[in-house]
Image (cartoon, rainbow over all chains, first blue to last red):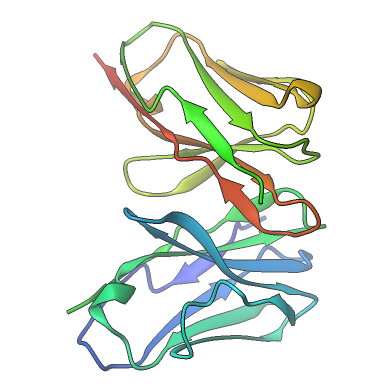
Length: 112
Length: 109
C-alpha cells in the first residue's frame, strides 16, 4: 500500500502569493494531520481532521492559513498571502485510529 | 501539557558501534513512537511502542511507561543510520503528537 503522498515536494514562491499544499492519506485512515517543522520551533501540529471533519485547529498560526478535507482521500493546506516566515517543511500524516501516525515525505516551502 | 526530553542531543559513532538513545516524558503515556528523520528530511516510523519491548533488525526499543521513559537501541550502526531520532507521544486527551527535541546521530565510516 502506498504511504502518505504529498505534493509538491518543493515550492518556492514570492511573498504575497497563494500557496496550496496537497496530501493524500493512506487509504482507510480516518485521521489526517498537518504539521510544520522549523529549526526554531521543531515539529508542531497545525490542524487535524477525523473523518474529514476538522477537530483541532488551535495550531494554525494565523487566518492566512486554512485547511480543508473535501473527502477521505484528499486534503489541502493553503497559505494566502504567504510570508517569508512561513518558510518551513510541511508534513502531512495519517492514522488509522488516532494512535500511530505515518508521515508523508513533506513539502519544503520557501517564501522569498 | 506533556513534556518530552531526549538525550543525548548529539551522538557521533564509528560504524559498527552500538548506542542507546533515551526519551523521558513528564507524565504517564499510552502512546509512544520513535521516528528517524533521514538526511533528506523524511520521517520514518521506527516503532509504535506504548509499553514493552520490540525489535526490528538492528533496532530495538523498550518503553517503561510507569517510569516515564523509553529507550531506542541501535546495534552495529551503519552510516545510513545517520540522521535525527525523535520520540513522540500524545498529549493526554488529544491527538496531538508532542515531539522531543531529537538526538542527532552521525555514524562515520
